[in-house]
Length: 311
Image (cartoon, rainbow, N blue to C red; front, side, top):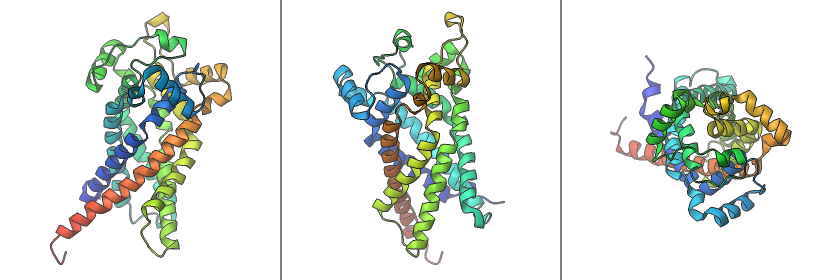
């Protein structure tokens, strides 16, 4: 029986990936705050990142730029741990297969890892979206009038969402999230491809921190641009779900959100906030991969240094 899925190597990659994403997200968190506001709040006049950040600072203060940091970081750590663990476990497990089609193999493994990640961590993301939006002054009337209960952390959010809206609400946006597994799949496929290309170009030389940053940035820019409309739909589904009893309306689904965007904003509504998202996600992903590679290399170095001689 192949036990690579449960190996120490896989665990190291998972911890390094989760830790790297935590560092990167903390550094660029205000950009994520601006991106979320642009995606959800249809009536916000500010269209560009600096304007949105300036508007938030003026109306709500500097702490609002870090609103919801703790639940987001918690969800991000768990999500990336699951993704990196699954991806690298599958990578080790199928190391000897599809050697001539490594890019396709990476894409398939990325999709599988993404599906596992979505099904296990979506409730955390739904809860932290609610937490992050607490106390926000919306320009969109229906969001400003709709007052969700106050949540005292992610566990309290789980409890109140289940009691008031049903357990199914915790998986709001799952369909769009499953469609979005192509984003990290493309990201990892391009990232691994560029790493292999670098190794061939430099005869196996390990990329520098700056080179890891550039490779990660290019890979994320391509994957984000290709899948951004789905991310807009996902954000609206996670936050904008209505109670079934409210106004006699059923909870909106993916089709309802698409129709609403087309009717109110046109096709460009699917790309609202793309500038902010690219700035935030590219920088975050690039820094994440630098931290991930360096943390993993450091841990492996310690492990090898402590291994008995001759092994």
